Image (tube, rainbow, N blue to C red; front, side, top):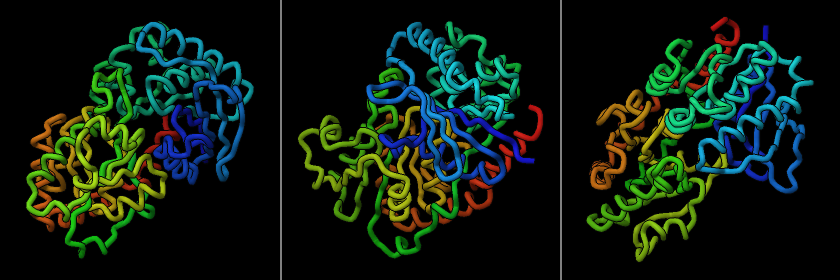
Length: 392
């Protein structure tokens, strides 16, 4: 029997941000095949946004709550805002809660806390999906603060997208049920493009962006974009044939201005860098299809979706040896692992692929095989559906 799921997230595509939260959009498209899914999209209020509205994406109902919440580095103020946010959210949604049998929240440090409050009010089972920075940064600092402390009592099961993230949850909440469920990828969307195997020019791709995450201590370099730009500069300057290699550089807040902050005095054309900005769902697929190597030089990760998408697209991977990445990427087998922030190691890894074109092809083919065997989106749906049907 299909379960009726309230899927709570603070990141989801919207009219003004159509490229936000695409991994959640893909998740519900899979989950709705075996379950009844409604989405509760939690947002911060801005002028001209309604406090509460309902929309539909295909056959999924989207409840959108927009409530005042201000960005702040003050942990106490943030926790107090969350304390009131979850109560106002309950006031606006409580008349509809009888429609659901399970709460599935995504993002432990915000949506998960709201989900726990709803669970306490309704006695519905609550599955809290942990995704990375929600645990590694926010909960690690704030788990004992007002508005957050005790939220775990209304979580029946923590699901984590890597074993490394599971270990952090076990450290914070040692008496709770935890499971690892990798997000997986839709193999029909992300496919092998055999044409790129005949192109004797390497395309490198980065879509992590340059968002300023000041709370992490890394600023715009949280996803390693600035590290990559400096490594790429070194690589191009020392390359015998730089024009044969190209870097597609994209993601949130990627503009010519933000790039110039990191590589001032250099011509982007000389460096063979093409700015591609924040990508739509289809554009991600398009750029993956022509990339040979995808670069993920992050300082922190749970497990990045882009890695699975790259593997499904038969790309080799250069990635930081952090979080859940080494659980999937084995050094010199299906990718190259580097230490985060190490400019020279990253430059050398890029050069290694540039000097051995067929290495990227072989690793990419292996990655596609691994995805097909272990990490498809169908397995993600099967595991969550099974979890919905059983007691944690």
